[in-house]
Length: 235
Ligand SMILES: Nc1ncnc2c1ncn2[C@@H]1O[C@H](COP(=O)(O)OP(=O)(O)O)[C@@H](O)[C@H]1O
Ligand SMILES: [Mg+2]
Picture (cartoon, rainbow, N blue to C red):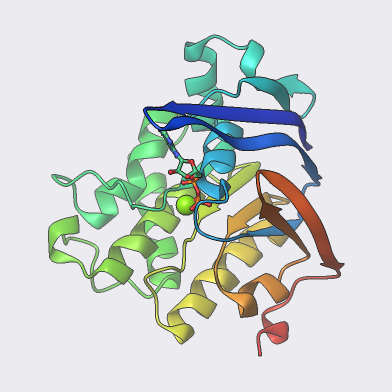
């Protein structure tokens, strides 16, 4: 359902041109959980942002269910992000004036095909699963880094997206909370047939994913192992 073909991206800086991505190809099926690993600066965030249409590539294309995302107008891209994509940013990007619950409800309110009660119920249940039942009415400034990160995960998942992109979603979390977040994402992946692409520095979580892609010098250098993801595989 996701097909990334020949993606290239350069950044022009005062120090010269940096080729961050060079002819990157990969694909993901519905219900598949992919991990992307690579050193800091290897282009992981840039890759995720292009797949999520937040950035544009210099060359190549991203197809979602056969639809070429960079042939869409920016208005169509915004609609597609709201209807089909979930994105967890490396910095959580929550809206500071809204409570945790309101932040999570917002994407579905924008989508506009459920009642407020239904949206409230779904958002509250998801926050409960992520162990945030006692933090519903906190604004982001009153949450710990790990709590804010989990609210951002809930916001990305609440719309049951076809594709969930997560940039180090467990970066600020202790080991047991990281497992809980991973498990919640894996359940969404399996139950809703969502394709998940997760950037992670956690070797344990990478090894518990269906497939691991390694980004090195702007290229996907190895496709490490390939089997069924499970929380049981976390050492
Ligand atoms: N907007 C930008 N302008 C210039 N350079 C950038 C920009 N965004 C990222 N880079 C550079 O591109 C490289 C890859 O960045 P990034 O995708 O954030 O890597 P990662 O997420 O793997 O740490 C880094 O060297 C970074 O400094
Ligand atoms: Mg990054």
